Picture: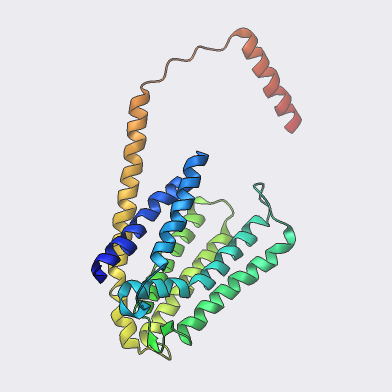
Length: 260
């Protein structure tokens, strides 16, 4: 099998099927969930079983970058999980004592990423990963935009959400500051010229995000409209009887008097 044929059948095709299988894995039916989970594992094994050295293809470098980010991403996800679900939440709360550990994991994730960014760029046998700069620029740009909009949304739409607004604004401004620093100063392993060159690739990512987000929104609205159209007009509701009105009045008066 030619390398191009292998990459198409054993890398890009399984990668394209994973979102569909994720949908099966989170479905309500237990059999579908089991099938989705089994095939996700199989496809991941197919993708990971790269027959040639990773540095021989861009797809191999993609796997290398993904593997390099497992540690920071896992620390961040577990940190967010511990921090959120150990607080005042009614759904599956964790012990209160794990919350500081969650914050520590988040700090560890950020420090780990910063260390990789400034001191230890992912590489294989001295050859640096060509996707690293593009990944960093896309990540920071996305954080600037998403966190900025989240801060504005929390401030405008939220009630007493000043703390959350400040956190989102801090993330956005910090990411923006790191972007400016990389474009102006670079890192120990990369000249700022290369970072400025990589920044142009972010335009494609932003365009894809806008197109994908817009398409998802249009699809969602279309399905809602079709569903409501099939339901038809609701039937008229009969007014309450005298006995029902009396019961409702008693309940309302009892609760209103209790609050007063």
